[in-house]
Image (tube, rainbow over all chains, first blue to last red; front, side, top):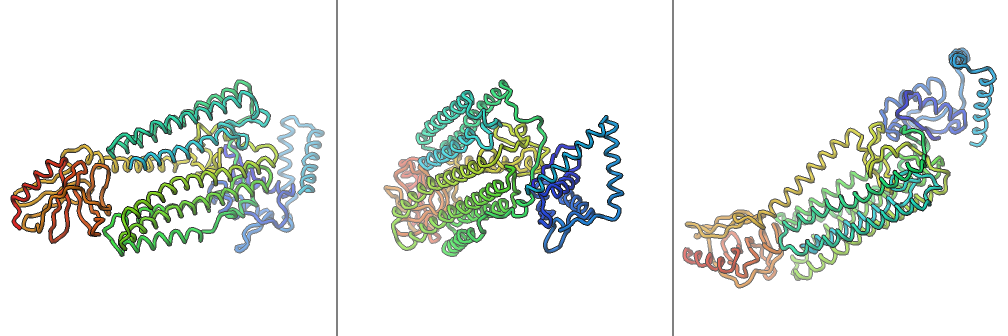
Length: 129
Length: 469
């Protein structure tokens, strides 16, 4: 998959990597079990510190999206197994996201339309890949 | 010597001219450093600017080639070298000036017509995870470098064993050092980060592999070029050692040099053109260009982006790679390179100037009880009269081949091997004097002369007065 990182953005690079890999899995741009570059390879290709990539990979590993093997390197897991308290955490994050929408004047209809479009996008691109 | 300078100048001008023409060929929608949408690439005004750029480039090269003829007029090596370096600087100013002028014209045209291509100048770095995993694919094996490196090392060591005094040993060690440095370049190419040009994986894969292949092939070519040079030097030495004529060896060497001088840039140009064409074809198969916000950071052929952490960036005009001038290491490298070039310039030109124009650089005279011999690029020598076995006045300069020192149109100083006898002798000769003095001692053979034949005859007379056979 293609990672697009904005070097002048306020969002930290490790977070951009994390978010894009998760979206990549959802869209099917990254297949289940697909190998990923090593921390060093990715850091050299982007031109950033190894620690930054390592931070992103550790977050992805903790959240169950990727796994790392000393011999085989990193790869996307074969099946994402949700953490026991996943729904609880997800609901909290969604709450914050909805709150910012409400504060900024987003209506229920607009929110529903947006979510449906994003999910349709995931499905469509997932089918293409 | 001056013809060699002129040939090098022409070869360099051909290479510069060729690489600067690439700016006028659209690559990834970048034409004369300006990103233009497909529909504007064929615009009449755009074409006019491109035409004017190419025409001016050609004129600049013709003017520089004509100015280069002044190298042939001067008899002094120091002047020739200064003209050569000045022309190199002038070539850069003139050719790069032409480029800057036309980039400005193109950017003004884009602004005037509001042909915008992007909203902001955010630096976007793209990485393809699959490409990153197979980064080394396409590069030619390091084993290809081992044979030329081995040949050079073996030859240099052999020469060192045959004659450690020869200046060819120094030259071959220098060539070997260049080869080792070039081998390090191989590892730079090996570790070169992959770059994303298109949204399509296969196109990125093809271009990155093509780049690695071209660059590694280029390094192998350089190694063979150096190896052939080194072997030619050794060949000349061996040829002389086994009695073949000097004229034959040196003639062969000059032919080889001329062939290499043109074959090398020609093969580099063909290789680069081929690679460029392949990349261009591949890019055209994909969808529209991927804008990376880089227009703002490319300024007149140089890339300077402090927000981009990459040190090496792919050049937008060809298969080349460029340094990011905004990277902190580049400043240090720039300073070191500047100092090294300046030191080399001073180190080479000052001794040549001294030899050409200083009155004190050469000395061949009789002192109280010894003969004084002094010349640039040769060891100072005081020969006591008691050591002298034989002194002869020669009517012509001896024919010989330089082993160590300097042999130019005006003087021959240092250690030379005599063509007739194969003996090594120390030369302190002004070639403006037809006559020269041969001095034989138990230690070795010396040939010396003054600036004119009359002065040489006078010094010979003084030696004879003091010399008791």
